[in-house]
Image (cartoon, rainbow, N blue to C red; front, side):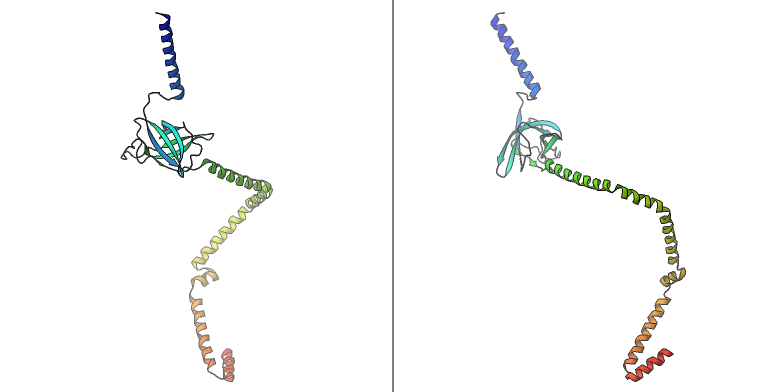
Length: 238
């Protein structure tokens, strides 16, 4: 074998090794077939070209391009050939972890929904903005810290109150038991208060007395002042 042939074989082997390395490092087969899908957002919130596209958590492609399209941001996806993305699938920007990193997540959709054709548009969902969530969490933590500080400043008073409640709990329990017994007696009509509440006699007598006073007042209005005074005087004396 000539030197030229050896050099040629060596060169081919080196190229093949480089291709394999690129495949393993970048996970991008050179002869992989893809098809494009698009989706639109008002904000991509840190999503970048080259980030992965995942269908139900499984990587099925990557972001090819991100451009401004009118009042929205267009995201162009390259999806591996044969991956079923259905018409009712939804696209949402998600975080890889709390430290950052984002990907475009696609939902499976329903089995009865038709598959999307290449260059179709996938409807998008607006997921909560982590920055806004973190601000709200920080606000809550701050309020909790303030409340904890107030408790810490008044821990002696709180301890005293709790001790007082603990010491008076037997008396409080006894008072509640007495109140329960009194209420039970009232409901049964026992005692003066129980009779007043449960017996209609006092109500009927009071009503009768008011009616008689009303009739007497009507009679007094029809008399002369002297006769009215005499009537009231002797009526009371009776």
